[in-house]
Length: 536
Image (cartoon, rainbow, N blue to C red; front, side, top):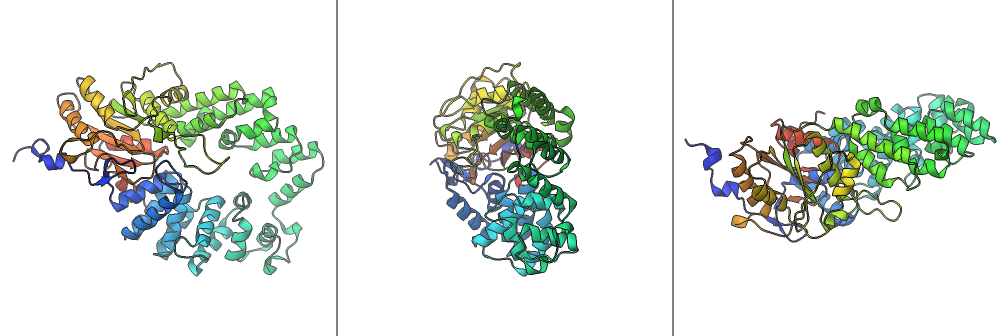
């Protein structure tokens, strides 16, 4: 028989678009599993450019009803938490799983509920009644009790930060049985002794960590508080309200890990910590600690978020440290098997906050276009022969300065465009202007809501241009190029159908780099396969 990759039917190469996207353009509908995985990796239950929070919730419920594979739901809950670093979606999937398969729910509970915030989020979703229950079932109560009894003192203290619901609410309904007087006293202190069985314990029975925390809060002078703060191994939030000035805040800052420092630069600025040159140097050194960044395998995303959110008054030395840290983190980005065309969507809808609109004061300054630009810049830094093509309804020529830092490069790339969306443009430019160059494939970073331009035989413009790209590359070094569509918003459709040479992946988290690298290297079968590869 003749080579099927060369003589396959036009139908397989030019699959007709089967849906219309939110922007009114041709698109390809994901399968229910893929659509649910995409929402799990990108959805935040906050309003985005083309979808409200309510419509996202409705879509999740509809997709869950169509996916009858409970094992997949369990794996997806773990994936969305551990790989995609999401918060709301894994908790929602866990609650849904508790109504369908309690055994699987117990198997993944501790991997999804890995801190107190996640515990309170799951509790909030249960009480809301949005997923078929509004109280703790006996099975869920056992899971909550197990988590509370197994949690360390530090973990419970961290869980006590926040309200609506509070840890006090969780404890009062879960009613874990204390194993000793110390835990009984701790539960009593966390709930103001509302539960009679926890009341007999006294303050002397409290864990030493809590006793020191109480001593810190009662201290009436800076010296005493500062000495206690340097010894306390608790989250800085527990000390903040009682801190008696900049010197105490300096002691608190020295107890913060690199992540807490990175996320609270503006707080340290307000509290006068960064008025001290020695503290500025200390914070900068912690942020750009090479060993810490490589050990924790941090990617540039976290440092861009810190850079964008940092106040103008944050010292230049610290902002320089963020640039240095992002450069170091680029070493954690995997290399691709060859240069690629990187399509960077800079259209108007990409100005939406990456995690959705969350209300005044809570909405992230990180926009979808910032995330996309960082992806492009990080891939380019590790694969310098690649080509970045920003686009909206037209393609732009991006002049790249190799001496630019990764954050400056991302910032400059994000300034292009602002118009409509034609996702086929990067491929069209490659086909018309770069056809003699060899590429291992193309990576499109977009919200996929393309509405300008159509392809042949009822296809999208992206698929039509991709077939031309494949034909052109067959004459060059890479005979089997791959197309990766990175979707950073939860809309449930794409501009190209999933198949052996096309991967649709959802998410704006750092694990996407590894997924893209694996696919281009023929080491992975697709986005859903990544989820199904999770071991329980």
